[in-house]
Image (cartoon, rainbow, N blue to C red; front, side, top):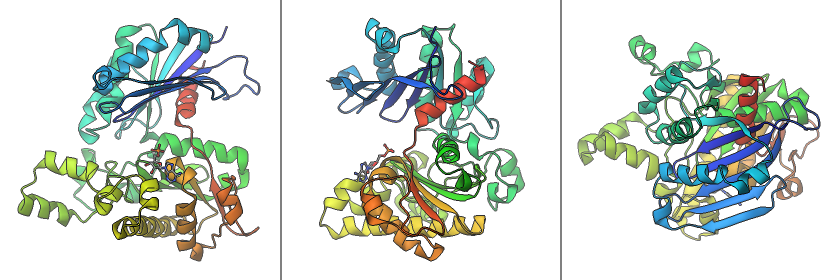
Length: 402
Ligand code: AMP
């Protein structure tokens, strides 16, 4: 009988969920057969429930009232009800055997995915102050499924875990040791996505997978990861998901003196700063128009152009820094919403990094091929769609030996 693994990825205004069958899969190993993929987006504004079958055909595309899903907790209830419906059972084709969850912060404790028991749950909850906007949303479906189905094993997959092997020089801030010991260190995020890319590289480009690779995860959140032999050596995000390169609504690295200025001169407290730094900066704050690259690319406003120019400049600068960490690169890999779809930005980032020997084939870039490189020799430019839900399901299967 098929055993089904649910993968749940609850974000700030959306819940992604997918069901994978573990049996009857050609190629076995870690291959899992996707049976259902779902998305509840627009939570708190214009909720929409989208459900597709394993082949990607849309089965449901329902606009819900704002009152139906005012919060991620309420949205979780909608997703949970659907997943327990006859409709879902027919599509999924087997009993749910386990659930894997994305959890943004695993702190210094978790270097691998972990089965959730009372002690693990307490440790995850205690890390909330390090990811105040994300961790509670990740916890909501964990808590709900513990109530709903206490018999089901649940696995936490941490965005920080893939980065836990960083050398101490990379992991430290230049601050007193006592703060490091209490957890103020450079963790890194988007690890589930980076680990998926590392595993995918062993299939599509095994020689490169063993080399020096910079992965650009450019989505709503943006970061870069330097990998050597499939392991993370450094990343641009650090203690929180605010550090590094600019994002849709976050500024990336910023002189701490600016934060002091905002406190002293603008009277901002921690809550006001948190709102400012997470929601009012980045492409949106700089352009005053939108956080969406598509909107900025279509705009004729000079501020939209400047925001995109700055985005490219900062990414190219950090690619240079990570190339220094790796002492050269064998490949640059683009992934996530902007990395997979933003052909223009890919071309601009590669052009700004051409001193590293990177070059882009315009036709391959427009056609969204995997290898976008122009030159037959030298470092490669690749585009690989990420699949965080599949990586969560793989971890769940491995932890439970399903
Ligand atoms: P993600 O968080 O990975 O879902 O990525 C979301 C981001 O992808 C959005 O903020 C958009 O700016 C970006 N995006 C989606 N489609 C495109 C596109 N065709 N061109 C450029 N950016 C895109």
